[in-house]
Length: 351
Image (cartoon, rainbow, N blue to C red; front, side):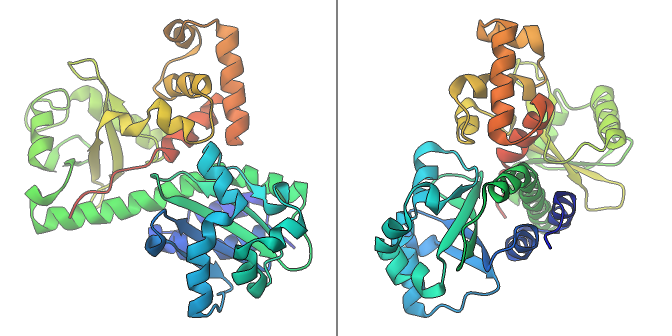
């Protein structure tokens, strides 16, 4: 009997880092939608960088593995995702008949040899050309429409769980770089206590403290300290950045992570609102208008203001937002905004 969606979400968010997510998510998917095998894949245009992990472990020969890496681009789900940037769940049978599937070299040289007669797969947002895929296979019967819908409902939550795991990895890498030598951190970082007192800052962080982020006596500004307190009170996830206006009119994007000391917080400053660009949102399968409208909502704008900025009627904007939420598999603009913030990703610091 499959586990409910709420249990899948809770377990997916329990992974402590990115490696745990990669290794553990296949087993969770098999509990959610029964399958013979579930796999986490990272597909790259460079075949040498393509790999996967699965539950149960697929005991493939070196020759079979080489065939998979060489022929993976024949998978019609992967081809569709690369072409459309739409990562929602699809079945191989949505594109090919069983006879056509069996005619593929990919089937003859790999899938057929591991009894993968049927497959459903979906993708998590990633930096091109890498495609992060989650796939389930069966030997005896195809996946139902209901099971595809279940995976579609799970996908936005798995996007956020993946990003949480990536943020945990970013935090550990940043702390390691801070402990090794402050100047080695590849981005601006500020560590503060709950009262806004600055414990540590990289050189670029110090320059921001001298400007829009700083206050007197080696503290954050009063406004930023209050915003951080409000986030803690509301339980705002780290996947949603904190946007702070700057003097040049461009928002400064802060990822708020748990600091190296108990009760401290680490502010990792990201360029250009965490990459929340229209092309990045189009990469989730949204149309340009849907991406433009949802981007403004994610940046804190509402209703008539979004319509004015886009030169559209409020009713048209609302239709774009409803369509974006449907395409992302969530309910409403607020959930859609949370999903795109998680989807655009973080920049891991150089160590």
